Image 1 (tube, rainbow, N blue to C red):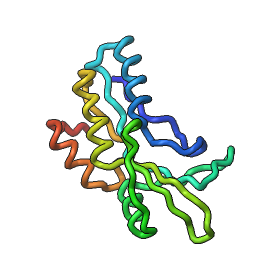
Image 2 (image 1 turned 60 degrees about the horizontal axis):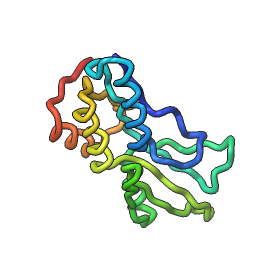
Image 3 (image 1 turned 60 degrees about the vertical axis):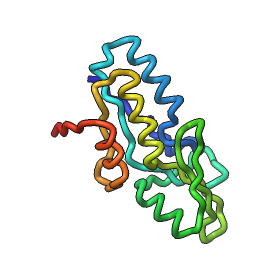
Image 4 (image 1 turned 180 degrees about the vertical axis):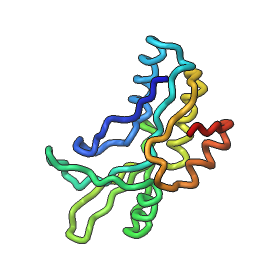
Length: 151
């Protein structure tokens, strides 16, 4: 089975964790070189908090999707949704007045990525970092697919 997830982009400029266009481009290539039934699509279970402006050599802070939602609530940020990359994000200022942008996943972005499993007839998905609990993730997954847990 081929299993892929996004490359570590904590040291890259702020962007969605797994932009749908990039995920789909990788899937298009993958199914062109191997049977789709042997491919598990990687699903991230985390977000990134970047201090702006991006400075090469700096790194974003990793946080769970739940922590991202809680941070947005705590700082009073409005969560927006980028339709092009199918991902939520928000902006805020920290206590020192530095601007930040946080990209993470929510039920909409999770459903958009999970829809690619059927579109490309994939074997399924594999989650990267299931140590953080985000109940919405599992609700969307269970609503869309029959789950077979492999340990």
